[in-house]
Image (cartoon, rainbow over all chains, first blue to last red; front, side, top):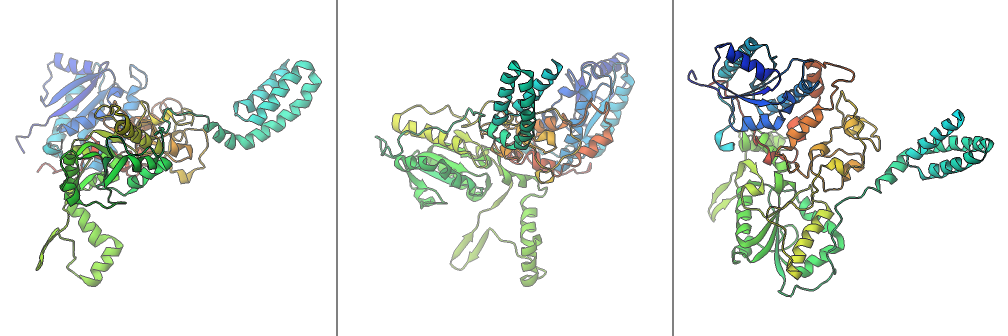
Length: 139
Length: 430
């Protein structure tokens, strides 16, 4: 499995995390290229269906990044996202997924380094877990 | 005036509780108050009595209020009960059950006397639960000889698959009838067994108390599990082969119409029968292919008479654990109700009697995942900004962990249509 390159779907909120990812790029921080960013207006815009769809299409991991607690542009969006993801983790666990395949993290607009660190850690985690257990023919 | 203000407030309280008796007394108060203050004092006492009476009667008042809620779905009138055979001759009707409990077959009779129209309209060429008609009779027919096949149940074994494919070949129209045929239903929850059919067969024939006892007594050390074929001297005997994945009807054959429900409600069924009867007698065009019959465009909450009060809940309860209050949303009382993620059409029969919606009518048109819609609805019920500005992660996990078997609850009827249809197994990086 040394040559396993995970495919990771990353949802970034428009106001904090996407700007944080942008900052990481502008600062030329080194990161693995396993993640694809999808920009959403808020981490609460990430419907659990999006995450399940990503897994069903063969994503090895899904990251949801939002503003820090108390910093949400829409006041309470990130709290809602956290609640949903806690529930979704239970469900993924019941399906048989390792719940570590779904990560929720807070990255602010100024935290390019935290974005880099989060991505590095998550790619390491997924590399250890191996490819997604969802089989192609079942998609 | 302050006294009168108070009085009028008192008058409004019972009136708001929708008690007719209280309304009358309150009206009296209004008139009396206009004439003299003394008279008003007298009726104030009466109003007090009315308030007490109203409180006692709140339950009944609210249930009588329920009766006023009108539904967009009325039982369709099929016209004359005994209209005789259609001018073009009787149509052929087949009713089949695949992996189903038989409740759908029984539900067809829920349309009461309208069922007589069906007898006049159609020859029932197959109905395993009620009428004769064998597989070989169907196989001997020409393609398209059957006008309508009503198939209930998911597709779970080789027999189911063979029969639904045969019926599809011989039928002009196929109706997926009931939640199992439409979304997989309860049988599709078997997809969540990680090792599939082997684990299920093994469990059923060796681990369940009755069979474990049997195996222990008669087949000690060598448990017997039914085989799908056996070569007897007279020839080979076969049983249907169980599949690892339970499928919905439209994952196996082409389906023309969907009738959801566990079982479909009689309004829904009579709408379906009306569509067929109009076609058979008057040649009225059938609804476009792929139509789901008997649903509304909104969720069940739109039909449910209970009122949402934006309560925050910190624990999930079963109906037997609480005295279910009438007129208040079940979710506000901590009972997990799938109404918010379920399409309407059933008339909210369960929630009206204090039982939570289990989601048998399936997801709304805009989403594929009924369960995922429900996660959002449930998550938004937890305290957010009211009493606890942060609601830290441990607390959330503690609350949501109270939901036993979340997949089985949120996907009770729709596992066959979920995005991830089967349990998965982590390989641990191997």
